[in-house]
Amino acid sequence: MEGRATTTSAAESPEIQYHPPNPPNQIFILSGQSNMAGRGGVIKDHHLNRWVWDKVVPSECSPDSSILRLRADLRWEEAREPLHADIDTGKVCGVGPGMAFANAWILANSFVTGTIAEASGKKKHGLKHRSKEVIKSLTPRQCS
Image (cartoon, rainbow, N blue to C red; front, top):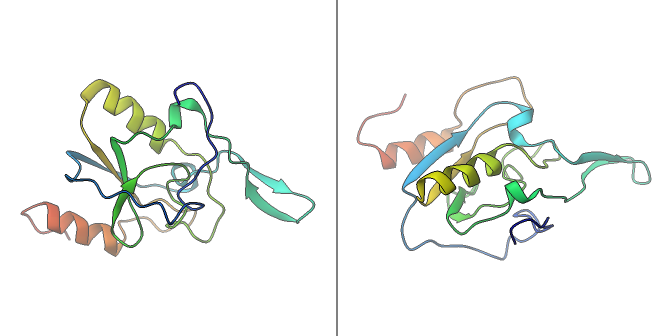
């Protein structure tokens, strides 16, 4: 699908589950505030009087089987926009910089790449409990 926009999102396709045979070789924690959570393409629907995602995905943010995301229920699946749909549940999520970064990374490094979405539009910073548990299971040292 290179060069084409896609409209499928993880939030719209929860029945599609991707279980990789091997865990990711590299894992990146995507933390920050609303810009990392993805507000690209979030528009006001004046007919419904609410914010919605327009579902336009730039080609740089297209899904790739080498890019995984850790779902809120701690299971890996193929990553697709919006990455934070089940994480930043208090806001409408759209396109953020995470998928563009992951696509550029795999082009340069050819690793299966995992993303752990941790951004939200709230002011409080810091890793959520779920990421700490995942990191503890992946590394021999204790995370505080």
